[in-house]
Amino acid sequence: MTQFIDKFGDINSVVPPTKYLTFGPWIYLVPQYVPKDVLILGYAGGTVAGLIRLLYGNIPIVAVDIEPCTPLYGEEMVRADAKEYVKTCKHFDTVIVDVFPSELREEICDFVLTKEFAVDVSRIANYIIVNTLKNPDMSNWGFLKRVGMNKPSRCDNRIYYYRTVDIPELL
Image 1 (cartoon, rainbow, N blue to C red):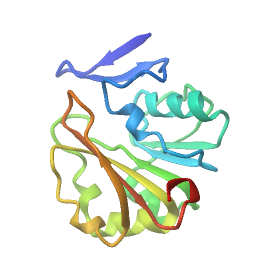
Image 2 (image 1 turned 60 degrees about the vertical axis):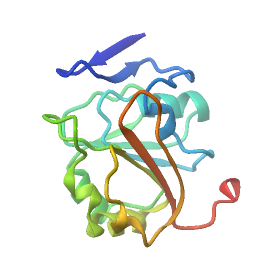
Image 3 (image 1 turned 90 degrees about the vertical axis):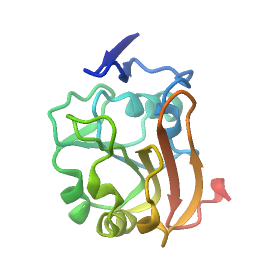
Image 4 (image 1 turned 90 degrees about the horizontal axis):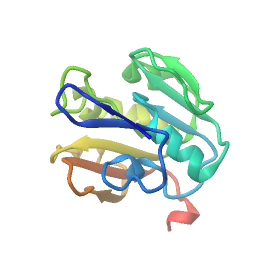
């Protein structure tokens, strides 16, 4: 297993991932049901995509990142700005929002907390997972049905789960 450590000394991704990656946020970014397809906004090192493959097999995954990334698990890679991509892309069963500025580790991208972005994502998803840090103001996401929140131990992440339709496995 290889760990990718950023300039702050934090582990940003693990290749190949295992289902036992409970010391970081990645396992909490995997949908709690088998989705038909997944859009990952913020691919980085691909740990979340690898976990989805490990746990759920060969479901279609589209990964979007503004930085150049190498697909490691058979995903379709799109190099684009996540904020713009969600305005015109197709519908996905699950959308995972995991976007952070590359130069900062203490904040998520500011657009994630806007009403416009929340509305755009809600239009294209049945189920949404949003990875944040610390205790963000998620009020602009309040029009959606929040089905949970996790705070993984030993990190500052807060991961929020929303649904736009009923998902029988989550009821």
